[in-house]
Image 1 (tube, rainbow, N blue to C red):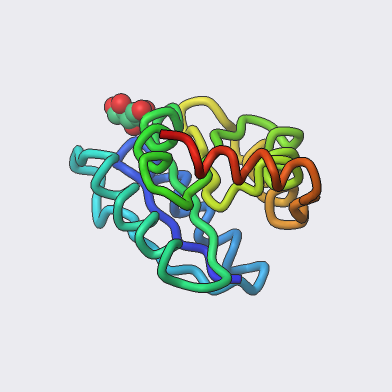
Image 2: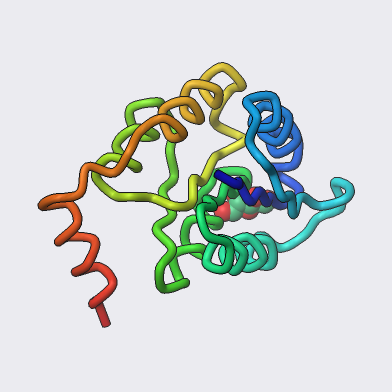
Length: 144
Ligand code: RB5
């Protein structure tokens, strides 16, 4: 599994932590983190990450901004991307089990490092349950 990682300036500190954490667990990480903390626009980074997730087989994305909200809105504009803002481990687990999320959105201004570790662990180690949830995902792709 390759993780594609991006943030804006408000998610950069947490982004650096997530990069280190995922690499320490043996995952390949491609990062689109900003080079410094100068203010940037989160949709630019959501775009880079989502395009890579759609291009690279066996990959998932992690997007971080201040609240995780802007990144979620931007990422979900892409067909085939299912981005979920997760604020605790239960959300991290259910995002995978029921929603087959392929982009995890995190909130640097809300979530502490310990909480983020538990969210990442739940997200990484939970498989999609399929079945009735698969039909619902298909319906999402049919919207519009
Ligand atoms: C940046 O100030 C902030 O608006 C952004 O990181 C994010 O929280 C937007 O949803």
